[in-house]
Length: 123
Image 1 (cartoon, rainbow, N blue to C red):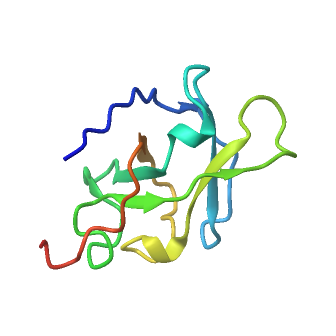
Image 2 (cartoon, rainbow, N blue to C red):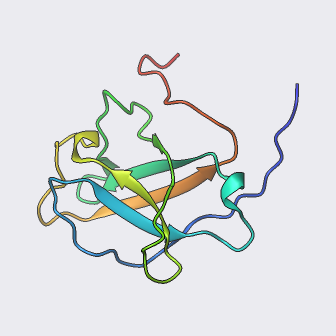
């Protein structure tokens, strides 16, 4: 049995993000800590909480744990240091789209081990 030792520092996310069309895929841009490299990160865990209900906004049938595992992408055309991004598709959401006049709390966590989506039956 081997142990994976890694020190991953959280992504640096802007305080606010530009507006996006609520029925289209949303890109969340972020920067990496200077202490991490792209090769340290295998995937990103996304948690999206509806601030009005304090419940996960992600579709429970697809993400029973309330966490979406996602790939990280690089956008060389992005301005500034926020060149990396993840995507949240409206089909990932329980409502099927981002709700009007709704605030969401987004949390991103990096993982250093490859992982697959948790099974929906909890095993």
